[in-house]
Length: 386
Image (cartoon, rainbow, N blue to C red; front, side, top):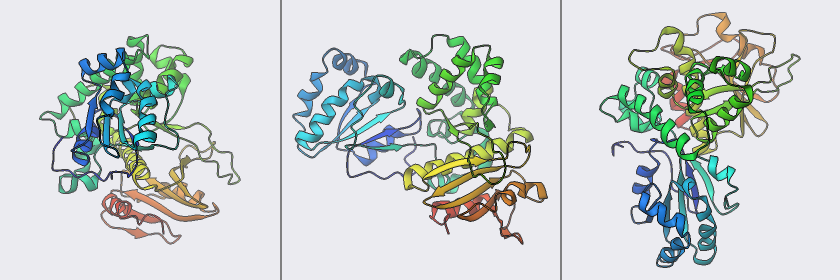
């Protein structure tokens, strides 16, 4: 990863897990943040095989580390049983650990010691606009994403295709979490098409040619390996029956497109809306992890309405923010329908429509229309909440 980009992540003062999809720069960031730490890279096959056969070898090496020092364990999900030794050395020697991983699946599935109360959980995300600075280009981000390993590649098209193959091979086969790899590959292509849509497991199953139960398992794999996230439905109880199913998003627009097939053209006009919406949500999600921006998030939509929706409702304490994302300039009354329908929500402090308009404005009924750049500035400057 290029040395030119400063990440907004900050080193905690205590032990922590740092999780994130492959290629998001976890190892590069930790090398800069902790250049003198003792480091164990479990992708090193010789080290992995040694510790697999004799986990106690880790303790032998940790005894030589000065009290209070930092230790990095990279790809910790490969050997989660090492966390028992990690806990012992946190308590007995006051060592501090940075525990990096690209999957939470094996940690959860194998009943690993997750160091409750002894280690924070952080996440690394694709590059954020504030990290890219003058290199940020919205059109490029929507077309190719901002995963560091792709962003800095000589050929981003080839890097995106290689990324999806790497995911299938290393994350899925290595963890032996999916028996039917051809079925899972078909599912991934369909999942890319469902980016930004209300989750319909039956529809996904039908299109992928597998059972609904299998699809639910596949969705769990995507979330546990941090490739996708679900946005729950908000129950505002605003005198309407509201949708209950979550919405589904791939973590990066470039990866969402690559899952569907080769990324050799710019997004079609009908793609831009879901890609922009998903990317804005992913950026907000990243700030939520780094800066505790909100306590809960959800989307809101009346069950009977086809066009009335609010893309995101954030809650912090007893206060709410409602955010709608539009790929156009927000000139139609329909663009404001969701934000007007949710206006009576108790505790609603702000209604914001993020769009590609050139200038900010406020409607007569108090909806703020913010260009994407203005919204990102407020988000980075901690000015989103009034």
